Image (cartoon, rainbow, N blue to C red):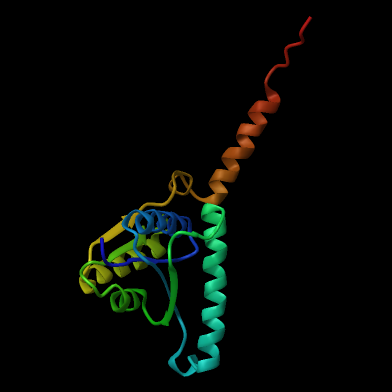
Length: 170
């Protein structure tokens, strides 16, 4: 197959799932993987030095994400990291501009305000890209609730375990 696999990366559980899926697709298609990260900066702050510093920092963030998501960076896939200022939908639309590309994005979060903003970005992105788009849901643990709720449930489970009767073997 021709084309590229383009993934919009964010350091969220859904972003990590999207990164894993993008590597699987790039491997299966024998296509290069383009990891895109839109950054919010003011135009006057986007000097050559700031661009280089941000690109180095984001590339390190992507390498760390590969290690955390899959244990290592993919050795059999050519990876390119693109860092651009601006809204994510515009940045992704400018990168995923070929009909034979595949764009992979992580889905919305559960927090209402973030979900509204993220959902609007997804809709705008779908309007500007010319290629197929795959929306990857977050892992089950992230869908089940907030970290605070999961922590409360873990503590409650531990307390139930510690209160259970102890049977002595004779």
